[in-house]
Amino acid sequence: MLIVITRDQIVIDWVLDECSGAEEWGANKFLSCASQEEATAQLLKLLKLVKSDEPLCITGHGNDFAIGDAGSDDDDWSWSYAEFAAILSGLVDGYGGPILLEVCAESVTSFAANMAVEAVRYGSLYGAWVFSYQKSISAIHEFPHPYKMTSNIELYGTQFR
Image 1 (cartoon, rainbow, N blue to C red):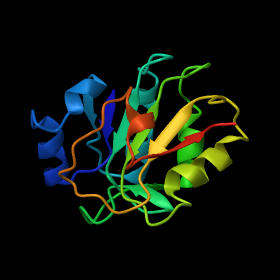
Image 2: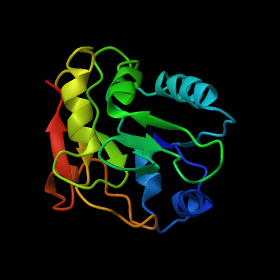
Image 3: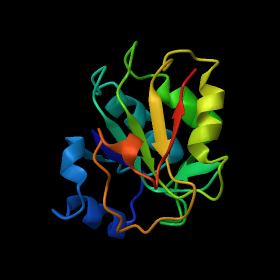
Image 4: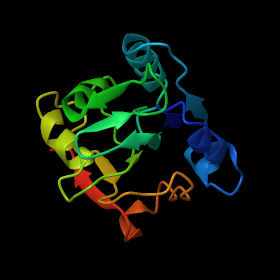
């Protein structure tokens, strides 16, 4: 499943473009909410639909400390890595599929790395892998294949422990 956590029309249009590679991730889901609370509730509901071994891609805007819809609208939403770790802990027990955070980062201590450390307190993602970038990426950036991320030199993988 691919979940778009921004209202940025450039990102949305790219996900829907047949050249984006988004179809490799399965169903595309888009958050469309008016508030932070609604966005969190909708995201939690979508994560309940993800099967235990299904690849999950989250795309939107981000940096090393927060991801979401920042800057797209006056009522944007975002989540810190601690908040997102708690949200991802809502995935089905025993979740083991690959996770891609298709968002920008600024350093090796990316959002995904910070989130993986924080997720230890929940334990529900033990053994699963999360992949991310350690740099800014274009909104029009081809999505990597979900089962070839370990050989993609642009991505950095972190295992939940």
